[in-house]
Length: 225
Image 1 (cartoon, rainbow, N blue to C red):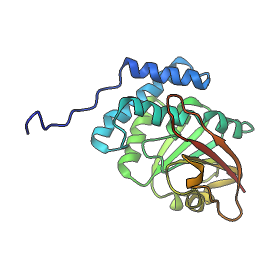
Image 2: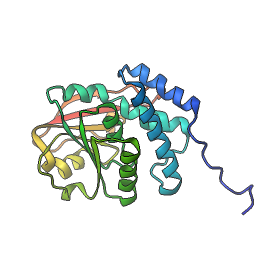
Image 3: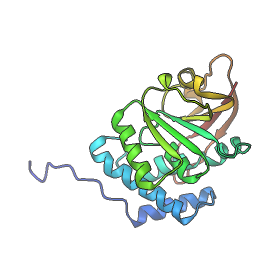
Image 4: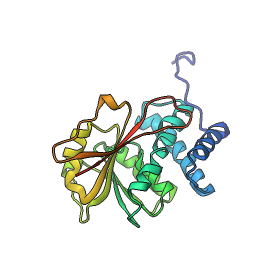
């Protein structure tokens, strides 16, 4: 193949990308320490590296990887933290986690949270397992499987999803895994696109989410029985 026809490989995340991430975290006022900043950046590097072979995400642009994935996942942290404030070591499930978003970001930012991530695609589960090992996360585990077939000894305090399915389907498939007083957290774009919940459930809160350096609608649905 001629070098003219060969697709350029994406550049490795560099200093400017790390600065963008750090600035975004500062804007969100999350109080993360230097080690957490470094873990988040390393996680972004892992996504970029594995994405070349495993096609984890359609995003190839360095800036968008920072804004649309890392900062997008971090931006919901204050509202989710508030929802879980009464639990010391909450159990969280990320459904259809893909490359680990937002679950691994939440696990990095909140070491006291126990985060389980599940995806039906084996290569994505394998990536998440590798990322957990590489980042030294003791509070996260990745599972390959279908959420409707997943069984656990103890239910989850919060079940989240990001671009997994419709809210209605998300709840229908995973409600057997939620604790009696637990909540669903659905990360969505525009409100009018998807806001239906099944009978017996209600939208307890709807939070508009502002993601640093991202001029796109983001909303977080908090759903209870």
